[in-house]
Image 1 (tube, rainbow, N blue to C red):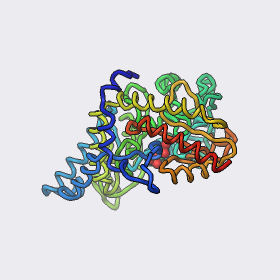
Image 2: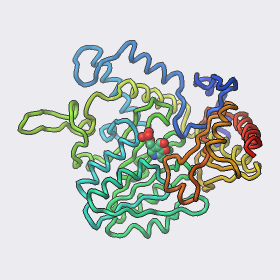
Image 3: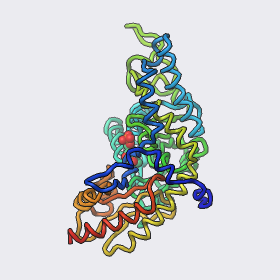
Length: 411
Ligand code: PLP
């Protein structure tokens, strides 16, 4: 990352774009360190949603009146912005409620009709439940098996062991780009290349990558890429699945209803073209207008700049946390996003998070929807501080001071 470029940005002004960050919690200034859970929203995103409801609200693709056209243009405009942001074609982006929807779409529409007893799906130890449970549902129904790629002590994938799992009966490999617990950035390009050489279809969960780095989906070489809007400074209930056109053309619809059809007769229905074939019902129009605004915001800021800022915050936080006696950090990958999972000897994760909240510090505690990873480390829960470009070094310091204080209370 280019520290010089990072320094050219006035981060105090950037932070001022986020109205919520000025509030207090329990009489203390809020220190929001839970962006891996959901990101805060800049005023431009909030205003875009507000403006849509105040001035343009109508349903998409149905009405020919002016508002209907404006709403459709705004919704399809958001699809085009996302396509540019991720360097893909707009007609290969299926808009939906987020990564969970996107991964289930692949599971039900691509995998379920294809997999058979004797086939295998490969996942990794560090997956979020959203990238485990859909495949278990598919495995139960098809008789396919699930194999798991393990991690080393630093929380990095053992890629040689992963490649050894890619035997001829494996039909699909699904893995996260960035771990929501460990911060590990997986070498998805190399992994997809190896899988493709073996004829294995690849699915990447980009939930934690899209908010923190510049993601060029085309250059990754995967078959499917899922992401969620609310972690990218956008509204909740937005996200998308990118898929190669040949997959979208071959996949049956997942959910039926309005918008996804060309003609309906009781004798049979002709479906719309992809991506609309997969977008039944009234979508989250205002949400996507907001997501379009968040893509504008992030593009203007520059994902390289945001990533560089977050790396600085991560380095600072890791250094300071390493000085806290009895604190153990989970995940020390060489390439890591700004997420620090930790435990402090003698203190339960939830107790720490609850007491930190009283100090105004919002961190997450729990299993982070990653039970298999918790089992691997032999712990029920961890604390997780996750940083975004709008955080400050002063907040990192205040967090560590608060942590030392609450730790004493629990001793
Ligand atoms: N995958 C990862 C790695 C995540 O961190 C999350 C959210 O925490 C998800 C999937 C699920 O995203 P959503 O709940 O927005 O569908």
